[in-house]
Image 1: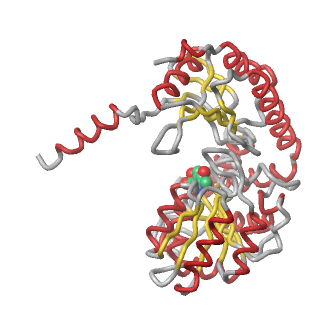
Image 2: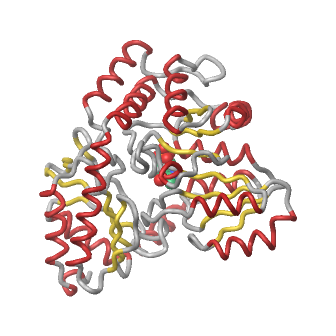
Image 3: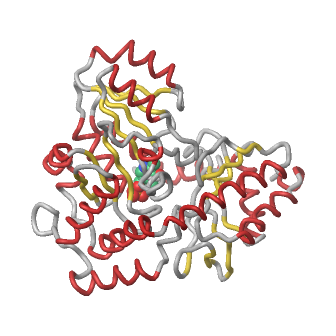
Length: 392
Ligand SMILES: *Cc1c(COP(=O)(O)O)cnc(C)c1O
């Protein structure tokens, strides 16, 4: 009886069209994937550079597994530390041009543990309302007072800082660099200025920036020219880097502090040798093959240009400066129906609904390994959409 509420809750979730389930994807990830016995063009992946299925990453992972086994078998401070972990952290620091870096078992854990280590009940966090779930939950876990500012609204943030900052000890500004469900980007230089003015640390989540932005591919901090400013950069090994894991990069003292204070680093098992080696290989490829990034950005401009030309009037292309391109749709039922239309046409796009986002949308992510014909197939389906067909 005490568990009855779970079924009731599930019923309510279904009724609101909020119910989620997974598709089972066969084989390696890539621009085309296979599930339910069919091939689909994949516009729903975070594997921006197409590295997750790359033979070189696979070989690195296999090699590391043969050398070090499948699990690292302990936390990094006890028996779980391997030479590969330190190599990876050095490679991240070099890539990001920071003094040091620390690798976590996921980006989510990096955010939870870092925020919880940096601030507590005496402190204050100012956070963009569209920040990723891991930043939001990290803020809650820390016990600090949290003020969400309206998405990218720095006037509102300034007003909040003026009103509240002085009542707390430490201050922390939290933002995604690329907002994962919209594809627009933060105003990093201005946020850093506000951090200086109001004595706040700034932590930026480069989950969707790393490997994608900047001439060297190291992320938005690089493309904004903010590398030399003191800040806390986090990111994931699981998106453009095609592996699994997260990291924080910054000053040596920050990293040293996190190794002593971040519970999600101290009390969890070290990254597996396979994941570590794959990420290490990916960081090398990102730096030696800028043509992947160039191709990705080519795909972004082509798709955006064509969508602007052909989208029916009741679809709205959300503003984006990244490989995440979203088309706003009026409600959850419509976006699900649309997702199915694309599915039938052999195209896999994400139908994103509340509570993940405030308004329903089709979320399209581009990859360096998409070819023109892949993009044209997506565009053709959009071009043929007629409003009545998509009424659920
Ligand atoms: C995916 C994501 C994370 C979490 O990273 P994982 O390595 O997948 O746990 C954190 N922040 C943002 C903005 C993300 O998109």
